[in-house]
Length: 524
Image (cartoon, rainbow, N blue to C red; front, side, top):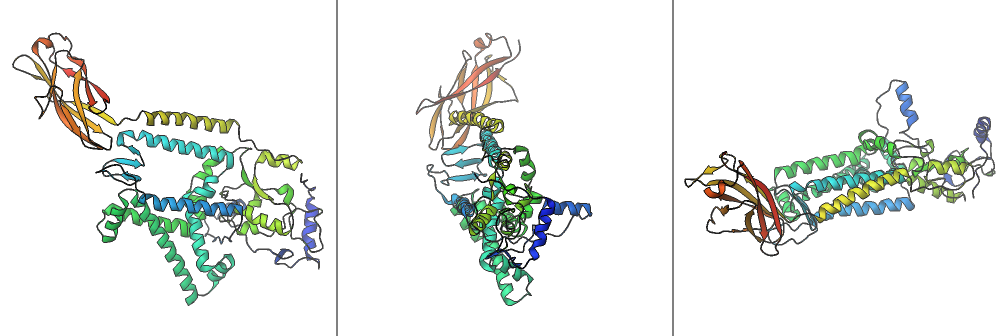
């Protein structure tokens, strides 16, 4: 077990800082022999904001962040997540799913025109939007659970802003070089070389943004058809409007604003603080091991000092422009690139990895006292979220299992409520709507029950006692039905309203659905 060194007093820290003028110290540009001390400052830190507030500088110009390329375990995870999420986003509209003739064969489609959402074999109609609500509630509760366990893992790896900003920075690095090259390029005069690199960078960003906007609109109409119409200038106007909106916002937020979106525009950093506790995993600088920090002299040993050589590698790779050594911060998205950078430095100075690591507050307090890592995944907060997820999941499973493929709606004629016939009988008129959610045509038999002596007929099929109605796949058919109660039967019912039931039966498999309504007659 690694033992924390005794922490020097403030006087000793000052003495060590003054000692950096001795002849045997490393070069001023080195944090240790052969290790560069990067000239970088954390531009988005709490202390800076407090100083601005105290000096009445509520608004100040943005200081551009030039993140250095990171290498390591967490950076590789981010590359894989970026590849998987962007590939899914761009390619899913082109995935086909056969639903039968006359129906869209796009696997994922939000069919606004016909009022349906297709997700592979699942079709959601407007009256089933509660399913969408359930899926969103499940997503929110899952986010709460993972935040309580591992902090802002969503922000660091899966958030749209993070993924596309990573992509834009990678493109910028491709054209302009790594951190130092980009800084020098921005300081240069506007030469042909600088103009070329800047134009190619922004042109690449615009192409990525256009691909993002183009992919978005393909989710709302058949992708091959819309793509062809789009380039011919024949697509609907909303397609061009939303393409331009998504393209512009992707370019602006991913290429230009970057970390400013997370710090100032996104509400999640403010909300997620309520979901963290002493057992939440956060990217943490283990100050009990790293302090007192400072450059490592050639002749200096490790006694009386911490493992941090103050090389600023963790600051240089941070896409948010913070110093993780300042402690937990609203700006930190928990991407762990500082972990990779620090581990690389620790390997060079032959010290253990994980000076910066995912750790919990409770564990840090234990390690400061010589204890071990303490990780409590099961605790009241996580049990609460997991329990809520289980409850909502159970409701969703029930809702999906009981999802009907046949629906019936009955609307009684309101004007007039009834018609009194010359023979003393009474007739009511109803609009019957039959919805066939299956992907093939079905024939249904319409009947009534619960009103003795009445008979029913359908407009156009008056001769049929139990009319059969064919409904095309995934569509609704509306018919006009007449229910007549003879004079002798009318006398049996003293009330003005007589409850009864319409029944629709699938002639192929006997599936039935019913709808209760009322028969109206004159008062006695």
